[in-house]
Image (cartoon, rainbow, N blue to C red; front, side):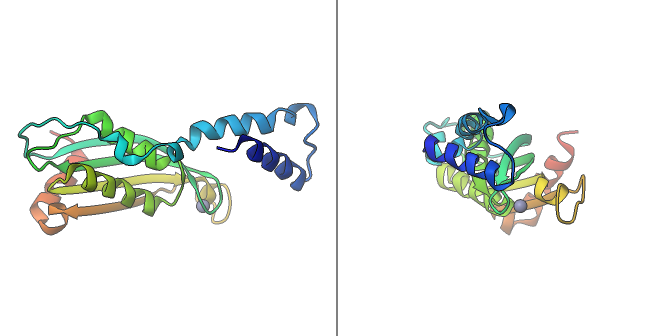
Length: 188
Ligand SMILES: [Zn+2]
């Protein structure tokens, strides 16, 4: 990331809104924001495929589902956060299993960029399809968008839900229903 450009931009932003970048509380703000971008937009520095370097070669042909993966992203239309939970499920091909933590990691890699929730959901699913070649993938994301709750329609607490379903979860209603039930209720 070009830190100097980021600092200039923040300074200009402060001037643009009519505040004084030289006043005490704001003097170091460009530095702080530039440093923060390294963290909250860290996805740009990571190739999604690199998350899946190794697989467990294990026979497992039941659904693997991780619920409630927290994520934070930035809306590319307003540069405001949207954040919530992702639920990721896949049905392995019987040969390629990834570590459970990789599912949370791939969510993070795609979330920490300027995003749209719809595209974010689709990109996570596409990465899983590419890396694991599973029989099916399902990604459901629910999020609050500050660009909806701080401004515009001002609908505090409203959540946007997106889902992307691939492979057998798309083709087979019973398998999809099983994944949906796991997602909703967990194992009872
Ligand atoms: Zn927005």
